[in-house]
Length: 164
Image (cartoon, rainbow, N blue to C red; front, top):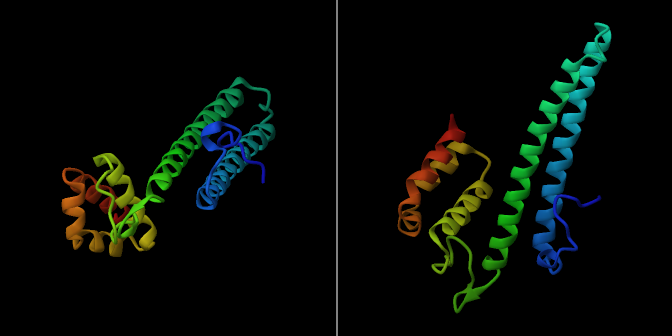
């Protein structure tokens, strides 16, 4: 697999742990899927317009440019999420006397509020694929209320959106 979601020769990404490299591979897979879906959609438009004798139309050019822009937005979101995951994995790999930082067993109180939000969000997104169970677990989590503070309600609303 060619990795082009981030530049691994960049000094910031040269010494990645195996967990971080797995995150890079997963993000690269997501990117490859987005690109493949975009190409399939563009082929579908081309064949449709070809069947109507309009394959050289500017409409096709504009539609393909729109699809490319949408795909690039999705890829940028995956890239930004990857960069944050790599950053927080580096923080999470540290620890204290109780062991490595890991929510909820040993939460890291040195993180900023937004970093805590991401740690708790990642925990609940990974704990189960059932959105209703995930939301129920989150509402019963008393540690999350204290740990997240004002971000508790924000994460609740995000998790609730997956239920609907």
